[in-house]
Length: 292
Ligand code: C2E
Ligand code: MG
Ligand code: MG
Ligand code: MG
Image (tube, rainbow, N blue to C red; front, side, top):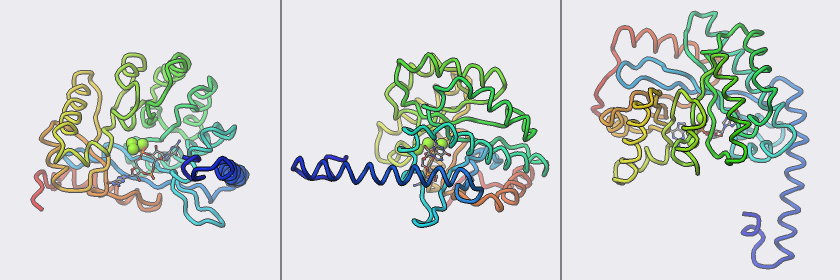
């Protein structure tokens, strides 16, 4: 994309690239500061719900950067450079620690809901990760099964062996693994035969196109069937309408997440929402059929 930005000439290309790398250096220097303080990297939390009962099946932690100069940044504005920097490990630990602190609060409130944390595949190349996560779980007194790691399967085959071992160790501890954006990576199916997982997340792009693309609908149906056959949970991402929710339920999908249910919300709101979701799920007042 740098070539596109720079237009046709070589000179323009070079200066665009220089600007980009200066920006990245600034960003990474600022990230180092953000990781040293407590209030810049914050988690937005989004529940996923059971389509039949309305009960929360989990809550995903989505990072935001309250940047002192640039305002609130979404992951699209900073994750890539972080993933390719030496700060990835520190970033991953920081996010996991914040997420486990939130989950520890729920446990104190008697809310038994797992927290899902997005983890860049590249941070799974670090063989120290399982021990570090084990230590963080003990420190926060969160049972390992309450932690779900969401991995996007853009893993290259040569790295699969290391990742395989790291995920195996985490799973042996009781931590759960989800494949994020399922169906969009290059090696989805091979990934499943190599790495033990607990959950598939149907990518939002298929949910959006489901209604007018038979291909997208077939992919959703097949993913749901595959999950059932392998004994995995399946969660549809990015559900925005009652129609999508109904169509997903008809395809056999059991859980979903998206603006139709909840937008990502600040940590201080989530306990109340979870509490009332659990109450209404028990009372079974969640509307099972969408009627507008
Ligand atoms: P993801 O894990 O697939 O997360 C889903 C994204 O869709 C989130 O965007 C969420 O806010 C958004 N979303 C949820 N429901 C809806 C909906 O109904 N409609 C639409 N249009 N969007 C919806 P967000 O928060 O900007 O995150 C984007 C990506 O950044 C995530 O995709 C994930 O891959 C990555 N990410 C987020 N937090 C972290 C993190 O802490 N660490 C790492 N490594 N990556 C993260
Ligand atoms: Mg995710
Ligand atoms: Mg996703
Ligand atoms: Mg996605």
